[in-house]
Amino acid sequence: MKRALHSCAFLISLFLLSGCSSQQEDWQAFLDESFNKTEGAVRLLQRQINSGSLRNTQLLNHYADVVRAQKPEMSGIVDALTLDTTTAGPIFQGLKSRLNDAKTALQSAPGKGESAVQEVWSELELIRTAANPDIYAMMLTDPINVLADMSEGQLARVEAMSKEASLQANRSADTGPGSQLVGNPNYGHWRTDSSGSSFWEWYGKYALFSTLFHRPVYYNSWASGRNYSYYHDYGRSHYTSPSQFKSQTNVNNQAKSKFQKTGQSFQSPYAQTKTGAARTVKTPQAKPTSNNFKSRYQSSSSARDAARRTSRSSSGGK
Image 1 (cartoon, rainbow, N blue to C red):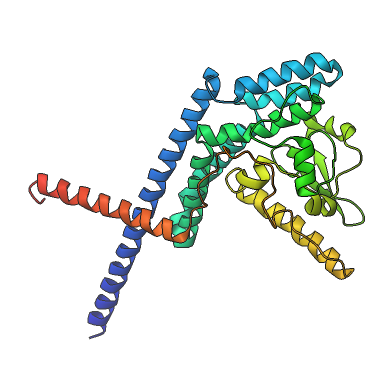
Image 2 (image 1 turned 90 degrees about the horizontal axis):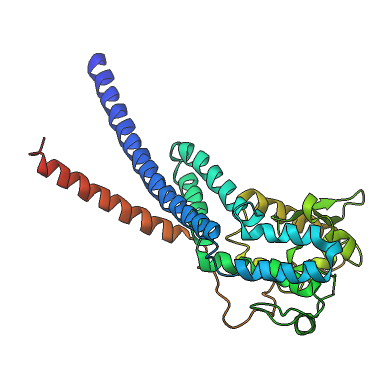
């Protein structure tokens, strides 16, 4: 009797493990398929950047030439901005880094459960949309418009209102050239000083911007008075890694908590979309949702099941 019970328990356990294994294999196949599509999109974008055929890369180089001739002392920062016309630029390198991280994460995600699988899939979908050449070209409008502002009126902003009109429409403070890039983790990060206040610190090659600003940019004043930029108002969800999102959230929560303790009101920098984009501006598709995930996964699973049935049928049912 005991042997029979043990045998039954063993068979049940084997059945459950087999079902679990099958589920994980399906998740793994789904993530592998998603990764291949995203990797293909990034490679296509890379080829277009290298060939010089990507929209706005030539314009960014042209604007750089104008400002470099106008202000030769600014050649260092101008050269740094033109990196975004190449695959060595921070925007493209950010996508590559995230793709590598997703590749690592998808190996263990199926064993952690559906939520982990959905998280990796969502990141892959965001990267794939960000690699769309038209959307990527819109990200280039921020460095282009920085150069436009540096030209002191010689060059016009692209896909955006003029600096004066945008400042007035958003009641923003003029913090100087480079303001479109403040808060964008591709170019710098928020650093906390001894008083607990966060200020913007540029990465090495963009450090010259700190000398062009009227004063250090603190998070609290920037949050309530930031002006329009493509990254912050349209591209942030698709051009920010999960760890960067976490860092941005932490800085925002710290600032909010600090203000609440002093009885002051605090406005998130993303409380509303700023005025400033041209009507022709291209925006990424909505962020992936759990419903999108279930729909894509079920569709993918059905296709694989059909392929298996066809394979078994063609092999004589063996």
